[in-house]
Length: 123
Image (tube, rainbow, N blue to C red; front, side, top):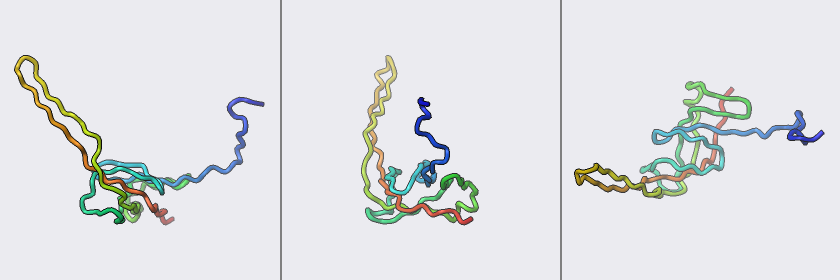
């Protein structure tokens, strides 16, 4: 018997994947231990410091925790790796037949964080 199911056995152990959805700088990021994630600049943190990120959702294998009361006590720990600027974006404004044109550039400030620990929810 061949096909796409070849080598599949239902009793095989699946890898237990622990990840969390965290909030930082008005954005949400999916993180796992060891991931390096780029967030808006955290001006108070220096390279090598440890920061805590608030958790919105926690997935530990098949167990999903989304209760805000439980998640209030769970903080994902991350280490500041780097502060850097993102790619340059060009903002061009132009109106036809009026001679109006404006050019502006922007480079967003980012902080690179390496996730060091995701605590599990107390059951």
